[in-house]
Length: 454
Image 1: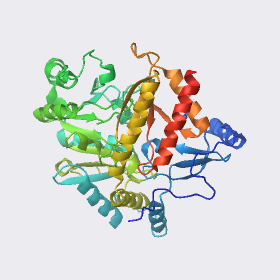
Image 2: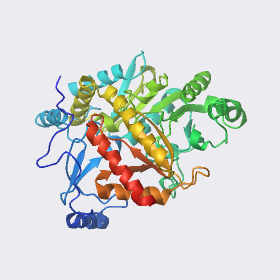
Image 3: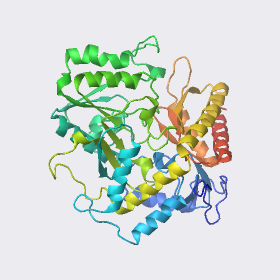
Image 4: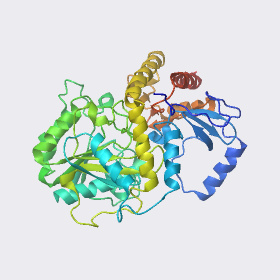
């Protein structure tokens, strides 16, 4: 089958990055000035004003072309404007754009809900609730867990990112700035350290640690101050995203599942950033053989439209109409986009492609690790990869300024990157990026590293 989505040529866009004017150019500066005046403060990390995007390439308003290793924060997993998805959206727009799916019925929503129950882990009856974002999916999961268990407490991890709404931010523990000045948050959330082996908070070494970071829950927390029969759910990411792309050891998630089942605590798997093929599996939980009770999804499921959902065991369904609702959740345009996105992922074997390209990416990153002492750690699954930068490999002192400088040098050379964790850089190109573009991106990364350390 011919792949029509791997790369779509824009009007005059080249197939490789070209920097004509050092960004930001004059047109970009005007947009940035207007943005600064009228937009509230946000987490802008590069002065790039986008005009056109196609595949793995982005063109700014001044005519510069960049390779995009951000995918809109792991959203555009098929690359920008994949033709099949664009066509599906156009077809739906010409029929009906909105008709509240929580109040009425339409086939696209029901069809998508059925599809999601089929492709998510677990051979049991499931139900779906649609929302507009990852944070909203977490909010829905929190309410679903409390409603169904009638328990009030939650457990989450240090380093976790589950969103910035008031419920979701109560679970988030990634950066101080995300929580500062927002108290009081939702009560009843207990945070514990994650399995961050590179910087183990217990100063232990895997595997001699015997997964103490999981077992401490049962052996200390549940016997000292956290009544397990009051805990509704454990929220976790199989790969911590904003926290630094932290990949836990193989036994960590299964050990957590064992403990949660013992106490009747729900497992809520946040797949918002890792889902839909990003890790070389359709969902990251498949790497660990763990089937969650509730899964939160968003980002890569819709190729750029604002959409999210929870997929939960049918027995956890809200029993009363109106217990939870959402005006825009399950929007017709979003459903059409998600159905088309899933079709492309399946028909073009993009999960397998992400695994293949992920091995290539890790090979390139480990080659850089061998050459440059500033790289303290390389980690990832599939095309969800990262490097953590340090001032010294022995002390592991965070190299924050150097990380920021590398991101800046990269975009000046035509590569868009996003930070993660305290001094990490994440590399999340499209799952169907051509190999020559993938290699070119890592070539630019190396040039950026050299420019900063020399």
